[in-house]
Length: 567
Image 1 (cartoon, rainbow, N blue to C red):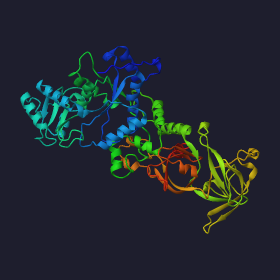
Image 2: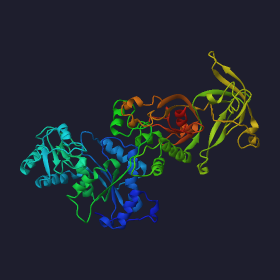
Image 3: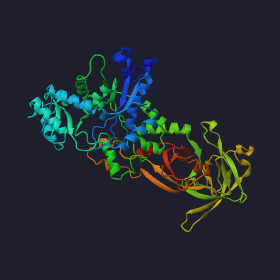
Image 4: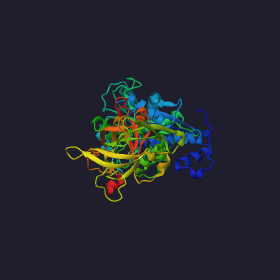
């Protein structure tokens, strides 16, 4: 086990409770002063934001104290596992800003040691082979207030148990016919101590070991032992594993001595409103085609959030904000959205896009003339500079930015009213043309040539400022407007309803014919972050091409959802 140089923070008052435990253990010299954590995902699905919280804890505490963090795949169920998931997990961790170096491990690395330990426990009379069905075992375990009853196979001889277990691994028995159980205490107040299953039979090729094994260890048996084999000092997990901790310690005691033993610590899970975190339910959404895949931008998966345009910093800032406690909580997704807006406001490049265009003809502007106006790339960071945007006689504005019969205090375009075109001129509406259905087809305006931004006349004040794009250089684009996947605040609490009934039917709206300025079209590389001025934050979708631009709305400029819900 390699020695780590431990960096103890100067002030412990800013530590969360897990970090304080780690600091105390290091100060006491436990495990030779080493710190080694681990992140142990199952490669049976894509990671979601709840896993991001665990990643930030496991890798973050190691970084803070100068320790190391292993990536260990808990690949103990080959039926549900896939290399695709392994690759996606690696990508997600790196994207969040963490690295495990050369410390990538798998529970399957320890299958030989775990098997040998199981043989040893059988020989010592601490484990036995049970022939009961899973239903019989569950019924025989009793309840939290009623002791369990012993299996009729609990008193098999060591020789018989050894023979059966070896034959189980040789593939002689069908799945479900036999399991290996620890012989502990069927009357224990902790249900996990009532002769837990250590191994079950699975006849399915493993993505790393092929058909070498026909018995696979259960989580409670494999996890603590894998921690021990790796030299993990602090096994940090979520609160549902609190009742598992005595069993974790029980099995570790079969290996550990006074010089070293891993310690399990639990913190609260990340639960979000208008979201489900169940990997089983997320998989169901994918398999039933209710979303477009694991990386659908509506999904709470890290890959979905990445595709939607969330930033690693925003996710980490959100996790820092909600913190780590010993109490379960339901966090408002609005807090996450706030963190995303804050980060995107800092880094997103500004540009013009008109979602529902209506043509404006500036009748006193010279025909055939095009001039370039300067637009700030990011007012939050002047060093980002400016870009040129073409202005010409015909432009597009938002249809909602014009009203023929406006109410009082309406500061957008209306007959005989003036507005400023952002970065350009002040215009005045002189008339409109409608189609046969009475819909406005064109708006006619005049402009004041002395009011271009940067000229002395630009100081003239008007109350409204509109975004726009020049009609002859505008580029067509498709925009996907994403919203919350569920329309119920806490779908997990609605136990009497099918969670699919709570899906938000308006979670995706596709808008074609959006007009964007050339700068946005030319800058639409994968991962780019934009603020469409007065509209929201957007990023190019993975399917976007120069011939067919597709932008995903990451988030609106303001949270309108809460207002809608309160009406």
